[in-house]
Amino acid sequence: MQDFFTWLGRTLGEIIRFVVDLLLVFFQNLGASVRNFFDALTNALGIPPTLISLGVLLLGLWLLYLALRALLRRRLFATLIWAVLGVTVLSWLIY
Image 1 (cartoon, helix red, strand yellow):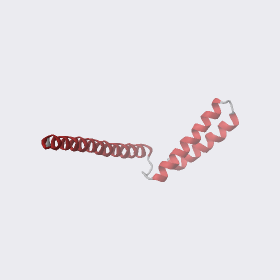
Image 2 (image 1 turned 120 degrees about the vertical axis):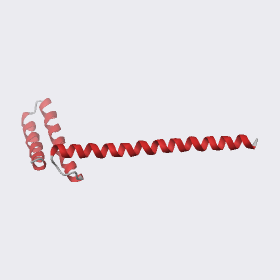
Image 3 (image 1 turned 120 degrees about the horizontal axis):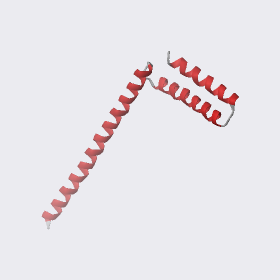
Image 4 (image 1 turned 60 degrees about the vertical axis):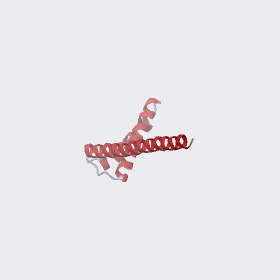
């Protein structure tokens, strides 16, 4: 009877250890993938790889998205305003 519970405890411990190791490897690879993605993105754009630069990039892309939405709603004046703002923000970043 004791051998059964010893085997059960060992098997359960090995399964838990396997799952923890699997998740650890997954998240390490995920972090490295995200880091490599942002490094390649910033190198391609010629911007420094800082959080502020990435935030400004997202702001500029969001403004261009707003311009596209305004264009699809046939709001020409709003499209021009959002597009000029988006291009201005991106031009500050990418030179």
